[in-house]
Length: 412
Image (cartoon, rainbow, N blue to C red; front, side, top):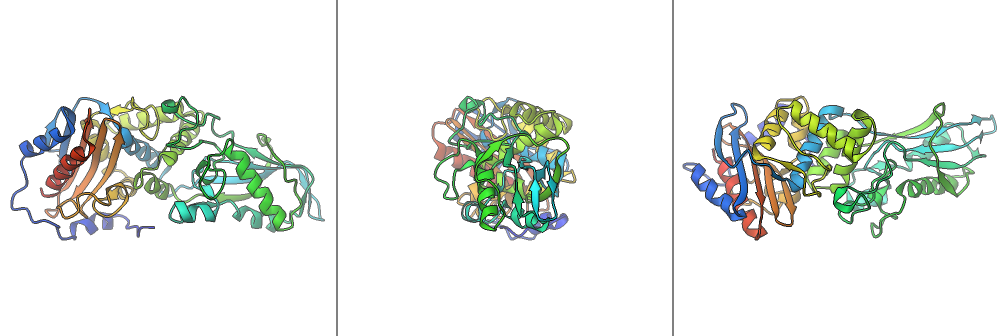
């Protein structure tokens, strides 16, 4: 995992970096507009000084375009702003029975999901998620610590914090190969096993079976067969595991552009602030949050896979500027990949003024390419920019244009 700087240290670290390329004079707005054309005629651009709001360059900046994964900027901004960077998501084991002195629980256990996208096994998240995850198996020692040695009932999986639609509009709300099956009791990013080969039909049952096997292996007598059932309202919490922080989950969403995390976080917003854990409610929360910051977005899902997620470059920049000023701004900025060194921009902008100075979010769909973010310049300026290209025919050319614009922004 990356070393995380906090507070003003995060910005200062950029300002102290030497520029990869010394520019005697930054390229003109006319040059940036010409590079915008590498993505085709249906492209828009906005570049502003984040502190003063002064517009450095813009072209067709108020026209809404398909966002692709730049939609994740709106999703992670909302989850950081509404939940807070330090919040964690709880997964609970609950009981509806009575524990006897001999360690026998007369009743059933319920594995109650909280919408944690990182819940899984170390074998999975160490291999596929850089070691970031919530260890389901930590629950077994906590149950043993409560004195539970046997369960007369069953272990149930409770995924009711979310609806049971597995996908978003792009896949007709069925499981998408680009996301995986969504669930209120997620497990190993929706895969049926730690090898990450096949998606599970019901992630909640997979999670409950894994916990049951783990308990049985440590001597707790519980039935191997599990089922779905909502925990009773008066059920008692007997064990809890908590996710990485929301800041870490936002980082794990934006740097590699993780669609699964983005959609889970969108549903989590719906469950917490929209009345129900659905994509529709979650995206409504995201749109309201953006409006509250003076921005705006037509949000259809959390990841950007659905082409009808739309905003203008001016709206993206308004979001970036507003988030920079919030208490969650540091975590939001750090959730974006550093140009030339990590995530989806690891091999881009190398050897330019943008390398090591710009943090950005990419976006790609057929015919769509986007790059938006911040540049922390040698001059001391913090710049916010958004490049949204639709109607793209040559993705490599679009990337060249975007990278040249970002390098120009970094040289101001």
